[in-house]
Length: 169
Image (cartoon, rainbow, N blue to C red):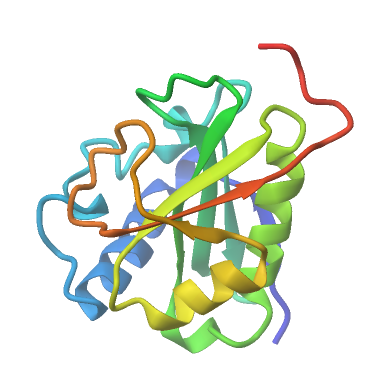
């Protein structure tokens, strides 16, 4: 099967929400303090529409959304050169197919045009995700940066990136 990655469109909002909620249920994260409680979960095409903020979806050959990832401003971060890797989820049936790599490559490539550091939060029981982040050069840190609104995510990572065209924000 082949997959296509593209920027989110308004028609994708509910499908992306369904992917995220499916994954959160799978990992027991269907509660407040995680992405489950985000008030904008079904409005990503609006939320990620400004410069420095972008969300990508992956669709299968049938046009079904099977995963997504975002790069967004990190609320409450003192350093404006830090962004957050946000809402990276893939349905179980596409894990191990290269879809996550497609998403991560798009996100990091975009981030380096605006930021110098990528931060993310995940959960302890998301073992494969933690291995994946480490493979991509993210290092575990024992402190939080900014205010993600996700106190239920208890594992933090960051990666320094230095793009050639980082804007002076």
